[in-house]
Length: 325
Length: 265
Image (cartoon, rainbow over all chains, first blue to last red; front, side, top):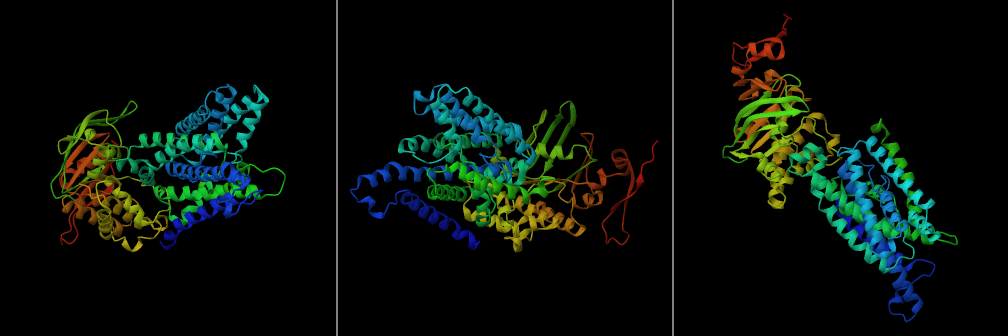
């Protein structure tokens, strides 16, 4: 219990430190006096580049951590996560199709909405495929189906791409990152993500009750159909909103709940907020690492997360293999 | 436990799985303040009946009423505050500690009970089941008997009028079976209604006030253990030859001795 008390404040402080670092660190190092300085270059870097990037990092990281913890709680499976199960890819497909059909330019909201529709649709398909009591096998197979569908769709869009610009945009999404994002992107993503987070947080008692299985939860008066719909929409909004702006950033929702459980316990509802804070810390840290890596051009954040996440997934699967067979 | 008496009325209940009729023409009136044991061979429909009463399954026809009000019309959370259900093979998905698991029993009271009231109910349930000493232990590290007590504590934490327990004694050694039975008896003595399914005839005879025997989805006997568990009924339902044995010294309560399977005609 003692460990639990300090865990949350410590995580908040960590996010605070990483946020400041995220603003300060990069090709140009900003110091405290940038706020007062008349140096327009530094101020431009701060306002136009670093600040939106750091805020977006917090927002996207927190929501993906939250979405991962919620999916694991709902499916009662520690391997569930929007990225690994193809939800992010389906969401990206939605966004890509909006470019492909040349409707993304009609309004700044078209592309994110298409991403959200993809995310919600992906969640619905996942729930239909895996059912409510997802075994590892059905879950992984559902993820394979969704990912395959998304990859096929995106590949098709790439192959038949109407212009080189569209092809370039599609590739940029697939890599995923926070580079060169402005407040414009933030104002589009933030409402979607915040509403999504609120919907997911509203399910925390259902997630707690599901600790006792489906029959246990229903006998506690939980309406699982409603919880399922609310989660599908909430996670769809989170994944769609973040994918539309940052592209596919996988594994955050997989890694963070696992790191949080030893700190705050395994109750799914109580894991949501710490996973959100942990997710913000992980994405901010990943994004700082991206900027500090040597080399001419920046590695995209999505690539770094996959480089960290895939071995983590491997270790997790290896440790769970007895349960799986 | 609310002291006021409560009645569960089951009227002409039928439940189907596809074309198969699992329960048919079930008419029962259950009173709180007593233990009702539902018996019957495998596949007789015992668990299905409990699941219907817990509103986990929707019957094809008939009605279940709680104090004259159709269960169907009672909002789910309100229903859950009055009827608690302990499934046959309770799932525990995460490695939560004992106190957290017991606290899940308070979920239906969200927004209605204060934190202090929740805490008191959880403490009471843990004390009654004597699991307080493990409050910080992870449930998955407990033995089967210990875990059964914790799950019972979870159900008691809801302080419902009714407890439906699907084979609550399975997997418990005789000592823990008696312990669990005594707990359920104390619930009934305090005015709660207990409906449980059970396979052990002697244990059923010993703890139940009323025995309902199902066979092929229908009630074939209903009454006190002595009236319901007759040799003729046991022969018909289980195809066993059995009889009641009385201890002449009166030390041991009557038991049901099974001689063997009924020879094929």
